[in-house]
Amino acid sequence: MKNEDQLKQNTLELGVDVADIAIDMLTENELLKDLPVVGLIYKSIKTLISIPDKIFLYKAAKFFQAVNQKTTKQQRLDFTEELKKDSNKREKLYIAILIKL
Image (cartoon, rainbow, N blue to C red):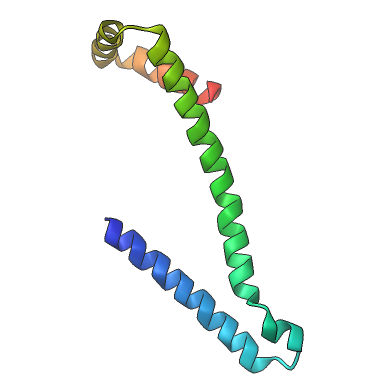
């Protein structure tokens, strides 16, 4: 799975490089020739997409740290068993956690 993701990433980056080379070859504008336009756009979009993911992961980590600090291991295990048995309660919990985050 990781190799497939890496292959996709490498293919995307290669496509970006090829597009930049094509722009360089087709344009007379020196500014466009000197700037990797497609690469800049691609990297900007990639960065903007990753920001919400990082915020979500930060919030999730803080949430789980708080749960870990305020409960004992046995309480968490008991609660896990309770959730395994009651799908309705589990679904409500998932929704509540996502809304909170």
